[in-house]
Length: 103
Image 1: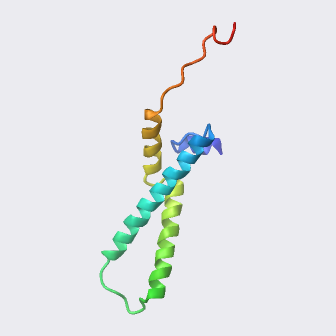
Image 2: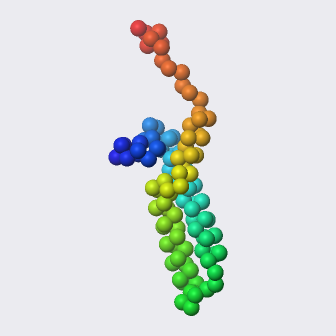
Image 3: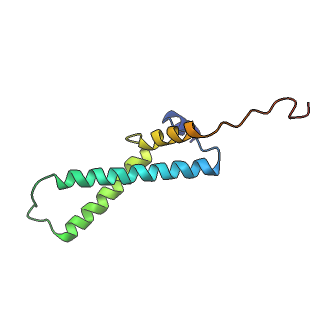
């Protein structure tokens, strides 16, 4: 599992804070994808003969599920980009020296 995360460019979570950040970044990517898919559907043209409010509701649910799956796979890389930007702004903890360890 760890090898899979590294091969996708997203490092495994080292802390609960980083795990939460990864979760939120993926959720953001899913919301973005939902909006993009919805906009693409609206520009698709006229209504079909079988279109109804129920059909539209199921289509929206399907689009949301598709967006969630795409975000989980990191299809666009938005979550990865957000993680890199956040990590670049985090202060780096100073490395422990031999004197600090009492050696």
